Length: 222
Length: 294
Image (spheres, rainbow over the protein chains, first blue to last red):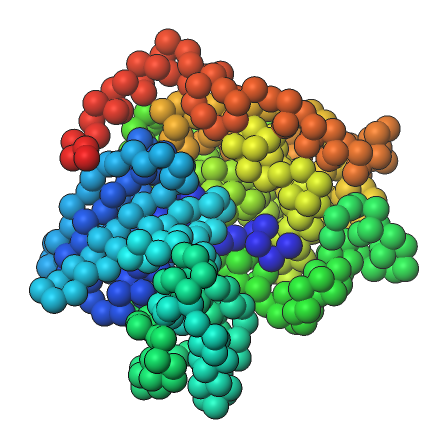
């Protein structure tokens, strides 16, 4: 019943505006810092009706750190220019892509990140890809994403660090590209994450290659 | 909660509709009743804020004019408008909030953004004319939420799945049940008000011109408050739906599924496919700034 009245949001569309703002914010949270340069590739109905629904403003608003109910979303494109956020929009058609989806390529001098997300309706979103790796993440909670080689003991090692830090696992999902190949683990947690925990997780097993922290949606509100 | 039956059964043991809804929600979500009430109280405040902002906002639509303001001027000139003071006031608020949504204002989806004018229209017109306590209005909002939950569980609240009956139709049904509560009607009367409303707009199609939440969405918000109000009066008078409430919602689900895709938010049929609808669509798409294609 609690999701029937609400969310409080900037109109006009929960999937094309509120969902888009959440996707922008999720990309910002994954990037973990101020976004200064981004290319945004709109797919499906995002590409065809983005303008009428303010999808572009909502995506940029989210990247600036605005919540979906922040009325500054209306002026997000101007605010982005004032804050020095450089953005470009493209349309792309990808076979089998979700009808309301978007690909972000965020970059600065020495680092880039590519994210694909979809707006599932009613403001519910899903992060579907990070740097070419298929995952599934709702973005409702803080999350840890590990990239590693598929080897025994990785899950236990990561879970061990979390137990030591008193971090409670809410959900956990493993994704791999074949046995012994590249793998990713997506762990949603209750509460917030400390940056120092990231290195401890990375060093907990030799098969771990990279760890991404996504702070909770309540954090980093601008 | 999956059914009106479930809610009404709890009400038999001396609970009001909103109390039964909160108890069921608490059982299912594990959240405390206080937290559920606090959340609705927050939504009520946000809704009130949206009404206040919307009433004062200028509207510049892509396809339609500021009809809320036009209606307000008309109401001010009439002693008692043909549809009465309550309905015209509710309609004026519903038009405003819906216009505000279309211009990227901050609203409360109730149950969706496209139908966000109807509930505030009914609740705040009632407040303005009859002066209930804030607490009563929050409880009325919970009644509305319970009705919406049953519709979501048994049918759908998405226009793309079930047509406009699932969005503006659901909002009107929710509002009708809320009005019955505010007027002191029984829980059973609330349930019947909701489905009397649904029965009168079953099969309503979702056909937005150019895919935007403007034509016909805004005016549908403005007109459906009248049906909600009348069905509340009928239910208060003791009129009952012959088809049991849950069966009406089940029929609504099947009707929604039977609607052709062209009439489910695809802008391929209905008003969107009229010559004028197509002309507006063409004009709007010609204004879209060019985007690189790769």
